[in-house]
Length: 344
Image (cartoon, rainbow, N blue to C red; front, side, top):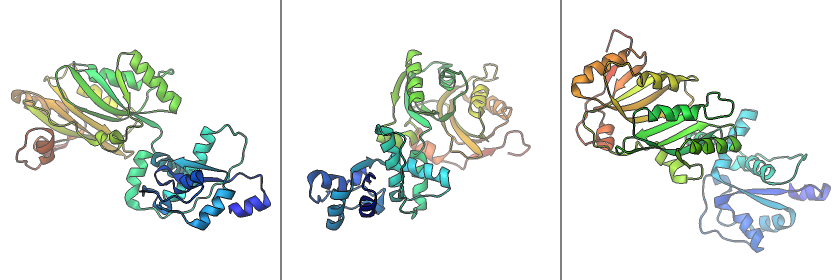
């Protein structure tokens, strides 16, 4: 293609694109000889080779005007953009061109130009779709926030974040993960909806002005791949119970749930010790909540929960909870309770 274009329309600029962790052609052009890479990433496996071909190198060093490197997140975003535009699912290597032109336009000074992109494959591995969906989510920002471990701080954070914008319109909270650590501070990993990089920067500045300690986790690979899914570790707490709630996913659903759970007129006192929520785009979603409550108030708690209108499941005896989030022990099958119904 480059040979044809440079022959017929030599003014056309030819730009090559590689994955940043498999940049064999870029390295070879820079060093003016074929370079053998020590290792390559295999996410874009259709273009992942340690050593490029000799003939390919001879052609590209003379005909390709520029090389662009893209990371896995940029490839995932390109796959998502292509799907939304064409309802076609590209494989990672097939989306390199889309990712490259997006980055080129964003980082270069060129304007009012026409771009043609080669989308070279759709041999998608179904098992990659979950990873791609998570990493392509450029409409949300992942952060870690420190708040005081005092009553009301959890709900106050939600409102400060949900309405943290100039127009004072609700902002979606897509992920919320908290585990009790000590009596002084609480550390929360959360994601919230953004309209772009400038919007995300504004929100972080406003949160810091309000006194929150905020860490942007957008470039933290360990946080994005692992830490966000961890429950926060074990906690040594007396009389902790664990419940999983289900509710229809709709705008404001999480806010309604928090309002119910923080109702000051509730019949029994309890302290929230764990909270995990993740909006996955399904019709229904779930929240995992740990609560510290005395044994004598347990029956009153369930009477209160029955009034909420949410389906809930007690998970206190769940094996995973026992082994990873509190003390070890034998587990019994979870008790299923359906709020508002006549059967348990």
